[in-house]
Length: 71
View (cartoon, rainbow, N blue to C red):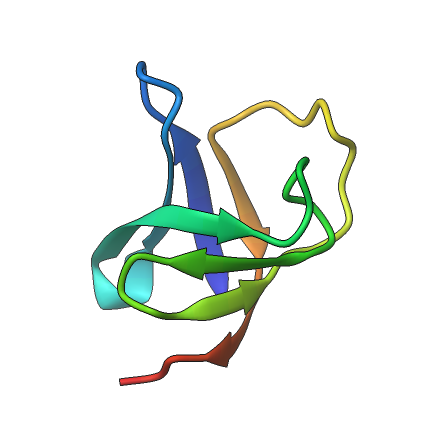
């Protein structure tokens, strides 16, 4: 699914799913640089993110795979 990842002025990461009009904070990351690993959202969803360079600029839209926590 297409998702947008953003960083707030406070440095907090969030993920937005346009098709669901859902924005949730990212509360856990498998890898320190986030890319190529699994993330967990505040609502309990887990998603796999694509491999990307650690210095990828945000905001960015990527294709992520939902792996857990479906409604």
